Image 1 (tube, helix red, strand yellow):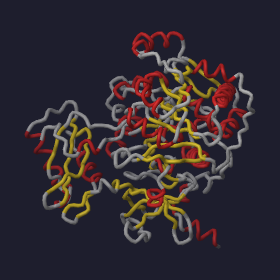
Image 2 (cartoon, one colour):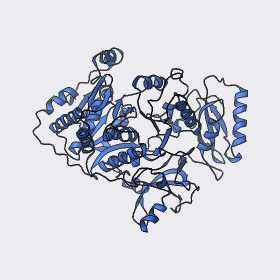
Image 3 (cartoon, helix red, strand yellow):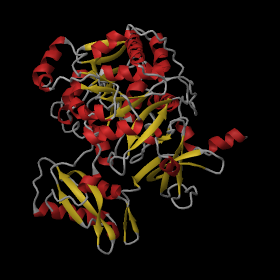
Image 4 (tube, one colour):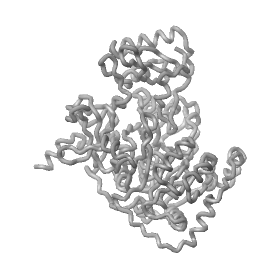
Length: 570
């Protein structure tokens, strides 16, 4: 009877078709998780990278060699090693090698500034670095200042086939200065020296072993290091594999989401290697040429942010192409407008694919996605239902009481992928990880949303994006959805700007479609459309028109750059 009541309390269970309601944690390292895959599918291709392919048997062999090399450098369990690289086979290999040892990988964006890199290295007490060669100029001063013991330099061209490698050198490689310092060793030499390691490496990683530091808060506050465990990643992907239902040993996934982000490291790479699928590794992708990327690699699964999808339905190169190879599209990392969602779904259907864009929701503090649209079901504007093993509650910001279906409150998450905490910051950790009356820990996301009677979750706004104007709560996403439905509008963003007596007011930033020229008639039409569909108290105080919206390093809209920005035509 108790079990029945528990299930009755979770209405989303009825959408768990051929799925478990929980996730059994293997109580192992991430390395052990993919080694198990390699033993089952040794000859399956684990990844391809610019003309080269590596099977699972050799992937584990390469990881073991790198682990020996790290051990020879003196890296031990609990030590922090920073990886500053885009998606490359060497960076992935190093990540799992460090996990085998029990070391902690501090993942840093390679486009971070010199000061940001220095801050992350110091905050994490990292004395070892694996870095792409193009960032070495930003590391030179830091190496001496922070007493860095060793820097392993990798190149984007190292695993390319010969022809691609030559092309890379002629266009990019020759412009990169060759790193030189006493503490620097190139990757080939690093691996070679590992052959002389005399310390036997034992994989003793367990559920609660700290494994990864990711970074959060760069667009809304001070950057914070998020400490994550083996359990966080292993349970995340086992839950995701159940929800996705497509990923497996006979599928390929376009691995373009970066390894320094939970979406890329967890939902793309670790999910891929835990299921026996093939990762098509690309260090970067040009959104304007995303159509060419799809036709060249023909991936079965696409995991991406909304800004990537914007180019698909407008592509002339895809107009007459058969896209039946696309089996699944998972979109996260930022808000996907309902209008764009429908455009992509219709485009895929018209080109032979049965896939529909599956929106997902998560944050670095819970590793990555904790909700996803069910494979068999979807609802407009929803971010899906809780994934197996996770529970979502909507709570009142002030009282902490649970809201009723349809009532807006703070999205709170309980589940096995919730972080261990922020490094060196117990105060901030305590603010977001809070126990309820039964001792269950809830991650308070700071995001606003609601849940319907079926358990589907709806995202309204980041709490810090919510606009309070003369006492009214205004949700930018509602205004954005209205704007994006206008035939002249390509995309839009609404932000809060200061006001002398209202406190703050909404301002809309608009990007027009390519064939639309800005004019007084265009402005009038858009404004009238908004006035007709938005409550008077929530109407934008002003409108700005831009050629494009600024983006963060991982492709999200950079809201802070827009506030009080004058680089647009009013």
